[in-house]
Amino acid sequence: MLSRPLTVAVVGATGVVGRTMIQVLIEREFPVGELRLLASGRAPGRIVDVGGRRHEVREATPEAFNGVDIALFSAGGDVSRQLAPRAVEHGTVVIDNSNAWRMEAGVPLIVSQVNPDDAAAHEGIVANPNCSTMQLAPLLMALRDSVGLERVVVDTYQSVSGTGGEAVAELESQIRAHVDGRAKEASVYPHPIAFNALPEIDVFLENGYSREEWKVVTENRKILHLPDLRISCTAVRIPVFVGHSEAVHVETRGPISPERARALFAAIPGVVVRDDPAAHVYPLATEAAGRDEIFVGRVRRDASVERGLAFWVVSDNVRKGAATNAVEIAELLVDRGWVSRASERRLNGSAGMVSGRPEPVPAVAGPGAAV
Ligand SMILES: NC(=O)c1ccc[n+]([C@@H]2O[C@H](COP(=O)([O-])OP(=O)(O)OC[C@H]3O[C@@H](n4cnc5c(N)ncnc54)[C@H](OP(=O)(O)O)[C@@H]3O)[C@@H](O)[C@H]2O)c1
Image 1 (tube, protein in one colour):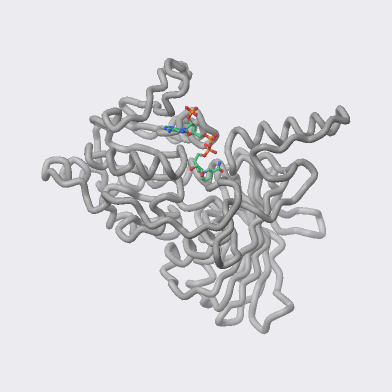
Image 2 (cartoon, protein in one colour):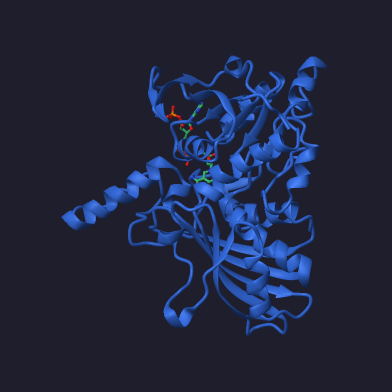
């Protein structure tokens, strides 16, 4: 374990996730010596108040990573593709929140409760999963380990904060326009999001899935070490500000009762069972917002299969779905002494094996709203 305070950079420090990353670093008393806040060069000289100390937001350039131990990236895939390898060349360990590196060989994709040991293999970049994957993988892990997974079907109900600050503002302005009797203008999404449900998150792929849906498929397979897992997803954006909800149907290999599933779920660190439907108790986005836990409820037998469960999962997409898990990865790297390998790489004159661009996923149409 490192005993010295670390130099930590947050890339995308002015964004929804970046600001929450700073907050979570403070809350969890991460050993930050110097905090370097980085964003685009669009508005130089911005000041952010962090715990009563004023920090200037600097432009994210390759040189800005000089001396940085850990960089938390949350500025979109293009920025990560360009700058993460440059940061690694400076000896920085990158924890990347975008979808740029998640499926690359040599880049561990980590949910802190599920596969922390995978992070040992990092070569400079560790990827933080998509928010919809994040809240699902711990529950699937428990079922994988107890009775085995045959097939998973998940439908998501995702909040606008998952798209970023502009989408939050767009929902607010459309609600105001509705109250005032004005037309609702949409620019972030292809249709008004207020009072609507949009089955389009990220671009559409040649296989008919949206890229968001396909991330849930491929990322769960990688995290759970089940490359052939049969899993399907429909991802829907809804007019909720914070908190993603998911309806999950799992066909299991062995039999499992709802009672046993609840006990297994309750035993997972960071998972809370809220399941008393008769008293109207089940997970809600409004209650999950601002919390770090994953909430699960409505656990019942899936009547459509011989062995299976249905349940409802809710989590704060900005916290556990992005910022909190990123900081948990940083804690893991520090606790296990896996940060110092960065300076070894620098001394050896190697940038690690992450040096090129990952293959793009073939896309056919749609607005970019990658998470
Ligand atoms: N929101 C979620 O729930 C969630 C969950 C998982 C993953 N993510 C991912 O996290 C990333 C950020 O999401 P967000 O919701 O925080 O978005 P956001 O609110 O739109 O913030 C974007 C951030 O990126 C910075 N940025 C933009 N272009 C840049 C550039 N060329 N160089 C450096 N910084 C640049 C922006 O800085 P300026 O202020 O200078 O423009 C801002 O700080 C995305 O990759 C997203 O897919 C989000």
